[in-house]
Structures are given as C-alpha cells and as structure tokens.
Length: 432
Ligand code: IFM
Image 1: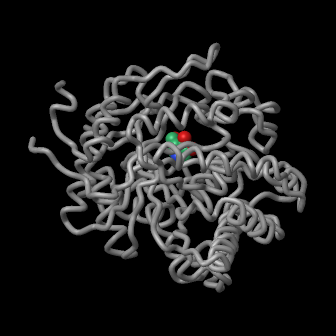
Image 2: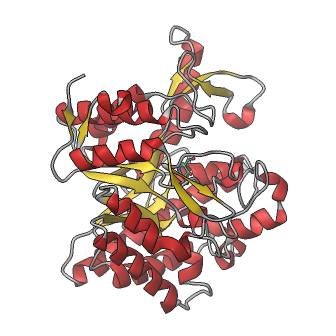
C-alpha cells in the first residue's frame, strides 16, 4: 500500500473521560458502584481508577512526547460544583493546569463538560430530567469557559446522550438503574435542553472575550443494518432504532425542536444551529432482525454483523462503517467532523495495529473524497474503568499496572506515535 497522508494541521491524539481515569470523585457513578458492586463486570470501581488526577502532568507529557498534537478529556462537574451554586476554585484551577499541560506538550485540548456522570445533588433531584438541569448545566459550562476558554477552542457539551439515556433509563445497567420508556424519553428531552443551554453559555462567554468556540456533542454512531438485507421485515425493523439512535438527537440540534416520537416538535431556546462541528464517536455497526420477544427493544434483536472480526468487547470491527458514517453525516449535516472517539478493546494488542491502519485509511479515503474531517482521537490512552465492564475491557495504547500505577506502552502506542509524527498511514507500520 502506498503512503497515505493526513492533512497538515490534522488533530491526532487520544480521548479520555474524568471518571474513567482520575480517581477520587464523588458522583452518581461512585455511589452507584458502591451500592451495586454486582453491576460491574469483574467487580472494581473508579475510586482510584488510574490515579490520573494526580499523575496528569507526566501522563500528558508522555503523550506529547509521542507526537500527539491533540488530547480530549472531560471536566468533572461533581468536582467543580460539589454543592449547587458553589464552584470549587481549586478544582477549576486543576483543569486550568490540565489544559496548560496539554498546551505545553504541544496538544490542542478538546474539552467535554459532561461525560456520563452527574453530581450527586443533581442525580438526586431527577438527573437529566430535573427541571433545573439545563440552567445548572449552563452555569457550570459558563464557569468552565471563564476559567479555560482563553486556551480552549474545542468544546463538547454532552458525551453520547443516546447511550447514557438508554443504558441508565431503559436498560437499567447504569445509574439510576431505571427500566422505563417514559423516563428514557424524559432524560432525552432533558439532555437536549442541557446541551442547548450549555451551547448558548459557551457561545456567550466566548464572545464576551472576543473568541469563537467550536461546539458539539460527542455523537455515538452505531449504524444498524438489517441482518438480512433481502428481508423486508429486517429492513423495516432496523429503520426505527437506526433513526432514534443515530439521527434523532442531531436532527433536533439542527432544527431546534424536540422531534417526534420523543417530543411534539416543541422549540428549545438555543438549540437550532447549536452544533458548529460534529463530534463523532465510532466503534462498530450492528445487524438487526425481528425479535418478537423483545418489545422493550422495539422488537429488534441486535448482534454483531456476521462475518466481521470481533473485538474483545464482542463488537464487529468495521472500518467501512466509519467511512460510511463520515459520508452520511456530511451529506445530511454538512458540518466539519472531529472523530472524538474510535478504538478497540483488545487484551493482547493483536488487533489494534490493523484496526488503527484500517480506520485511519478510511479517514484518508473520506478526506480524499472531499469530506471535512478535522482530526482523529483514539479511545483511549490508558486502559481504564470501562463503566459496567469494570477493568475487563482494554482499549488503551498503554496498559496500567493498577498496583503500582505504572504505565506500560503497548506496541500500538509506538505505531500510533509514528502516525502522529509523520501524519502518514502505510503498511510497513504493521509489518515493521
Ligand atoms: O469508554 C467509553 C467512553 O466512555 C464512551 N464511548 C465509548 C467508550 C468505549 O466503550
């Protein structure tokens, strides 16, 4: 294969989230794990996680030394606003220093404001569906932009709103452990309003300082295809969850309305045009077929697309699906895309080298076809706390000895560093 080049200025680095790496956080997830240890595969919690809150400076320096020019992390709301209305200036100062450390290491910071977790006080008041959630989230966003905004252009309001609503409110696997369609819809409406309110706050504060912010959610796209393309039933069954999971939230953000079937088309202030780019988290695709025994899943059975290799998480590895997502999202929304997550769970770092090569090739293909892709952030730098999967899934470029907290580079860390250094993707990366 010839050498394929990523454009000058293309962002390359890793993505992380506070709860999965920092340790020492008291939020809804910490309480959930303490109360439901059985909900975590293999046990484990994020009480210490990988101690990144204390080790961030050396961790970030190491990524910079591996030629990453970007880094995504999340600010932990529960630290910054431990009590409603009281902002913790030490916590904000910590994140200011995280951003400075990124900059010192030559990395463009990409900052997420809400990555699955909530302060306990908001979770207890109703979580995403709490009437005060949008206003509270906007104030917190404004505080973050005041503190960090002179060094940050790329903002993500909410990470994977569909995922957090479905796993926490429909499937009951994450906090608050609900299995209720009405509660799921209420959470989705709340997440939309939270995003809109935060987007307005980011824009206003940035403007008052003469800056322009880039704003998006991190949208998880998992294309759902009919298991049997020739079956009219499978085709029909795949369409509804595909629309709901992959398009509903984004279309609401573009139209500024809570679209059916989650809402009645009511307008949300600040929502229309609230995305200035599209943050894309992409991992896999799924095959969907009719399952009369699954009314809660809209009679759809989801499984890995047959014939594709499976990651350690049992997810089909499908670089073509990433290429398709880039094309389809551009065709519909016309926004620049930043790949805010793409990665593979792989215990022995056997699949990751080809995964990286194939997915980055898909990105180069898309760019060559005229799609505006601004960067690629690999999920994730270090093996970490993978939510209900505990420490059983290893997505990292580095493993972590959780007794000593030593970070150990896997072979693919060097491979990714070479891609970051040269901005080139080529076969010898893997052969050599
Ligand atoms: O670890 C998660 C991350 O928090 C959100 N996106 C998917 C990743 C892998 O499951």
